[in-house]
Amino acid sequence: LEKIAYVNGSYVPLSEAKVSVLDRGFLFADGIYEVAAVLDGKLIDNASHLARLERSVGEIRLELPETTARIQEIQQELVTRNQLVNGMVYLEVTRGADTGRDFAFPKGVKPTLVMFTAEKDIVGAPSARTGINVITVPDIRWERRDIKSVALLAQVLAKQAAAEAGAGEAWMIQDGKVTEGGSSSAFILTQDDVIVTRQNGSEILPGCTRKAVVALAEERQLRVEERAFSIEEALAAKEAFITSATVFVQGVVAIDGRKVGNGKPGPLTDRLREIYVEFAKATAV
Ligand code: PLP
Image (cartoon, rainbow, N blue to C red; front, side):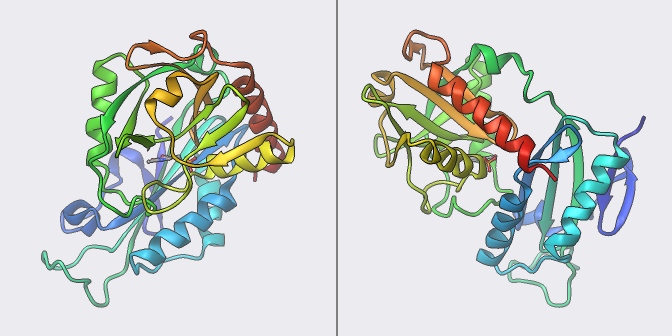
């Protein structure tokens, strides 16, 4: 079954889904993206992803070519057409294809909107049970990481370094503190049972999964502190984990080859993962 993609109003075979070489997403990374997980054929926490999409496009003064309600319909239509059970829907909006390569915004050019799906067994992934190793790299990104821009070269290099080291993620370091993972939010659980994750701000992407996990933890009277932490603190922690739309909650069992806790995903990590999966299923659309 050939997968179907959405390109500017049309549903086309993925292999034939194309945009112009003059597209500003391609030329300047002048675009925004979102990734929402799919579980049992339904979108997870999608309202949160669409709210972040609206915020990101607003920050770069790009107008969405469709309402977010319509975007959700298209996401759902793609899930149906691709008979997607578990995986994700990727969406990207760019400032469109102009007639040349002027840096300033073009006038009268319609933004490009594309979407496609991919299969992934998020709940049953082996790394959910085993946890992952992470490596650390310097955070070399720009100063507006709160915008979910398609300019991901720093993360490509960070995650390639992780892959070459046999690690599942790279934690990026700035001024001696962890900012976040290449494509995930970073957490630790301290020896006195405080869940710590960096506060939102321009240094990190405000993760949708991070937001949900923090709220779910606080509802259960777990202590949460939003502040930066160092690798030394992470190595002295009881547990460490990451969150993202496509992994949910995943244990971090080693950092730069040194064990965290007993080298296995901790009990709080496992519990938060179960709580998140329950929340995801209950709120799916
Ligand atoms: N931080 C970065 C840099 C990311 O790219 C991502 C997701 O891709 C996240 C955090 C996690 O965000 P979310 O939970 O919304 O997927």
